Structure formats: structure tokens, C-alpha cells
Image (tube, rainbow, N blue to C red):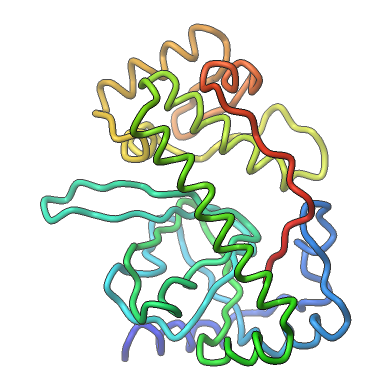
Length: 256
């Protein structure tokens, strides 16, 4: 059985969240569907997949018959060199689409791992053309999602290439704080970002020792609190100042 068949089997066996009552739809950051779009997405969705923390969702070089939208939980995209060194490319949160790259290139050029327990909405890749032909607004949404991901990766590349270690760490934690805060119904200064120092090191391209020293500097300034497995951002504006970065105020963004 290939990985696509395994996913399909799991998706069919899991309890399915109805698109009409999707917990993401009421969130202010997401564009709502029209009645026709909601009907299409409901039929486009084939099921749900529950993955445990540490599980590999998609593997670099694999062919997947599915696309996924994160319904709950955290994951991250990464590439690995032959000697095992890993570069984390981006973090994936509820509402984010994964697997689109495989629909265009035929195979995945990165892997995706569950950072926490994750629930995914599952869509059949072969039906994506009907989305473009029957619902051009949804087709535009997919283009918007891809362009947004490119913009985020541009900023990440700038950070790794030109920011100092302290600036890189401040940017990453500030970026993740604002990304997860947008999913919260109310302002919450106690949001825990569920990453380890190894995740930070693999994202910033630093050694674990350098990462540890850098995070201690941010903590000593009262900007963050590092936990056994995660981080609480105490002063996002302070991190923003160090990084020289301001989060963009987006209009309602689409999701599938």
C-alpha cells in the first residue's frame, strides 16, 4: 500500500468535521465561503486524518494523491541533507494548506512533520482542476495562498542570510507569536509556542549552543520565557524592534 492509499484509509475511518460547522470559519482572519463554494468544498473534502506528534505527514520525494488543510495543531516543513542536517522552512498552523507543491511538480520537494498532534482535512489532488474550472474565486484563493507562502519565505531567507543571531531569533518568535495570536478568539499573552531549542536552531541555521545563548539574551531582557518544551512571548513589540520587522496587517485571508 502506498502512502496515498494509507492516508485515504485513515481519512475514511476518522470522524469528520462538517464544513458547515468548521471551527475555522467563524475566525475573523479567514474569508468565508459563498453557498456554492461551501457546497463544493464539502464535496471536495474526502475525510480527516489524525496524526500524532512527531509523525511524518509528507515525505520529500514522495507522490501524494492528497492535499491537506490543517484543522488543528502545529506542523513544520523541512528539508534534510544527506548527512542528516535539517533546515526548517516554515511552520504550519490551522488554516494552512499543505501538499500543493506535489500537485504542481508531481512530487514533494520537502517533508512535513507534526509538531503537536494534528488533525488534517483531506482533499483529492486529482479533483483540483475542477476547483479552477467551476469556482475561479477558489482558484484565485489557491494562487493567493501560494503567493503568501512565497512572501513569508522571502522574509525567512532575509533573516537567515542577513540578520544577526539575536535578530533572527527575535524575528522567528515574533513571527510565530503573531501567527498563532491571529487564531485566538481573544488577546492571550500566555500563548505557548510549542517548539524546542533544536527547532529554533534548525530554523535559524545556528548551532544548538549558539541558539541557547541567544535565547538566554532575549529571556534576560524580559522578552520571552523559555519552558521545558516551548516558549512564551512576553513582549512581542520588543522582539519586533530587535528584528526590525513589523507584521503586515492582512485582510481576511482565504483557506480551503
